[in-house]
Length: 257
Length: 289
View (cartoon, each protein chain N blue to C red):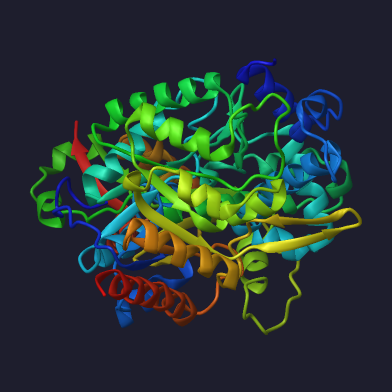
């Protein structure tokens, strides 16, 4: 009599690795052969995981079509099985998978669109945050500015793409009825995804703003961040930057080191 | 997520409730449907904040709550996922649900998750394993959990207990309550050729704390039909008949309408809950009379 661990090993191998031999002998045959009964589970498992991907990557699905998405997600599931009982944690690597997935190679913008959608998914479930205490910031002595560290809203993500991913994302939203043509050579874009209440906003950022936020996210101090931003953009204006990103709550806290 | 112990734990009454899913959040808040309680999948709130928590916090003020887990992999032989339990524990602290439940199934092996409710052999080894795991979970969560019977599409050669003996044995040995899914009993009775009525009569009624009702899908093959537990239809007449039988036997119980795919309008769920409610009222009257 096989032990429980042995049964589970053979069962999961049957479902995930299509190992048709192992578990079938442990399954009662009747009107339906074991292979067919196991097929029900294989189907349920792949459908469940594919639906999870579909929920996170609607734009990717729209771009490649239902049939191709199903094919790609089946291959992804086999090569990158879920590692959590929380289905919302599944699918983080889909973008990198698509980058190396031969049949999708021609759609060079697809991995970045997938990354944007994964970021969106994460931001949706991230922690809430209160706005920055601006009065406290005004009490900081000017000689301490340089060493200030700013904390980003947990419900935000930064990314860069050589493709116009915001535009691709926008024209592929459900309910969008305008022109769906996107010029893929429109140029690189820096993106800030930021949740405000129930809404998630996608902001294109200029190079200076992006550098500042990305360095804050790494824990760098204001003096270093500002230096870097000014090297990128000589006209970089710190006051304007702070009012934009404290105002929209991308920056929610600071510490004086 | 709300602060710890922001809510007091409202007991779930012996009434009909509905499963709360994302597309209905707004309407539930705006229309406050008259149902006895709401049940959510715990894993849908494993994130730290955002829309799901914002709604659950508002909704929790108006309804008693039940947390139903689908991802703990209770019956797996892998070690219990401590991180999963930690997050579940935080949710319980934050929302103070009356019920916390999981399935008598497994869903992972060797760290790979299949994210499904997979079948277990009905043997003493498995009963003992589940009892140990239920105790571990209850020790970590510092509260009791209920366990639910699942739908099944195959049987193992070496199972030597019937499903109801298995379910009863786990509940008795672990000293825990049952979440009896009557649709799952109906599905399994069809798929494996036993009497659903016998199942109802042979599980310990005093341990049934909650009942689940759902719709299913019949798949046709050359050799016959297999019923799949799809949670995408109304409850079928045969399952309503079994439910009447169960309520007559066990008395009124908190009863949940589960619907997960092809989600209908909220009204449809409330309508199904009202049917369950009237079954409980009629049957209760019949008992009193």
